[in-house]
Image 1 (cartoon, rainbow, N blue to C red):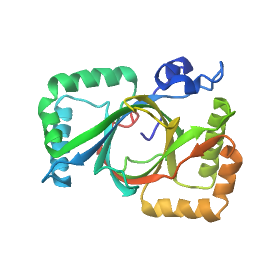
Image 2: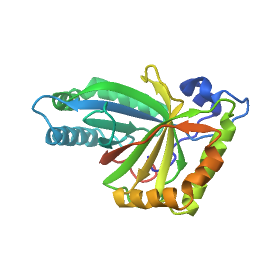
Image 3: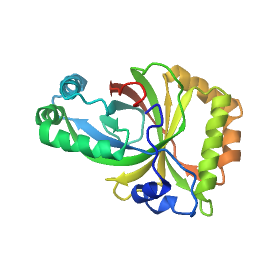
Length: 257
């Protein structure tokens, strides 16, 4: 998820993201790629070690099949509300065609790998999101783990999409200038989200909790929240973030992810 991956037209985004993006006839272009999420709970008597074993077996199968077009990480809640899950899975492809072909292969040939996951966890949601990067986390080798902040956002009445996107990008530029050290993505619900109560999810990544804490100080005491209100206060309403510790399970080769 650290680099923008593929270019789709605004018309394609309209097809997967719904009427949210259809507020203007002329839209700023966005690089969109598909992301899937699963939320799961451990089966009785199972735990993280069982999931680790299942993921290792799955990775071995993916390597044997020569798959280099899927990345994945697992997340565990750190700051959360009363309703949460034990572990989540986030996976991504470079484009929709690759997603479809990879899904077909997994369904037809990945039975043993799937069985390992089913033995460890039971998942109560599986969703797909049309995702675009707002701010790059920067170059460098792929990390083993990150901290992820998720919040649900709604566009305020009267705000036009191009203005929202412009505000998000300006906020990303500001965070780059102020060296927040994070990455930012927005995720439009495409499939499996049910009765959604948000227009999109905002996702922010940090290398670790120390980096997140430094950004916390910049936002709270260094003028960050005032700048965000200036850029987005009349355009966007986002709820309180949930925070997750994330472990990478599979990375794509450089240039793919």
